Length: 216
Ligand code: AMP
Image 1 (cartoon, rainbow, N blue to C red):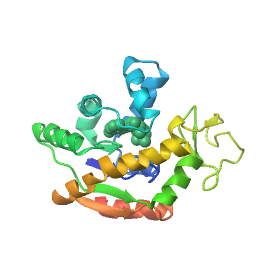
Image 2: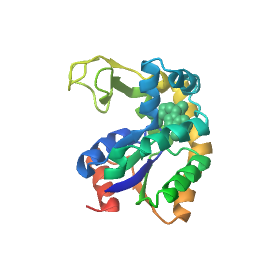
Image 3: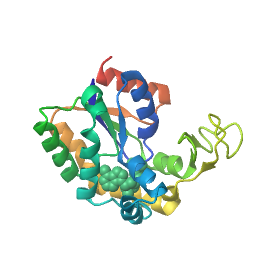
């Protein structure tokens, strides 16, 4: 059982590390960004609302996100196995609402993981990222290129660039992170349960540091 949050700016490698954490700890991966993208793909009302903010690299309004996240946390798999939150909370308000929700269920967070990466590295990672349309696997045109350009190694699906990974929107997302989300590092530090991990190290090294912070 694990109940934790992956904090860190866009491009810090939260999604990549989340895949590994999920595999090792058998815990549901809850990415509010993925939930919104699935809703956009399916043309839902929620998707339409979220899209206008996402395309600009802005945050979706707190109340909407809190409702989506807490609904998801109420599901049976989270009760059974805990959760790994990725991309939520992103504001102090969201963190307070999460705390209220957990307190109401008599639950506590384990160590929060904060992935730290310098800003110039983030920009290169975001603008070079390519994602598989079919299976969601993530690549990078320089760091993790697919064997055949534009094609997913795992499933043969087509790779595309996320609408919010262009230079201008990526920069805005990093600014939004610095203004709105970075204060959460202090927030969880005061709560006494955060581990700062070097997210610029090789992938396996970063993962090993996460495991040592979370415990086997
Ligand atoms: P991500 O996939 O985590 O990078 O999220 C993509 C976009 O979805 C963000 O840039 C926001 O527009 C929106 N989003 C995802 N999670 C949240 C959240 N917790 N609060 C507000 N907006 C969010």
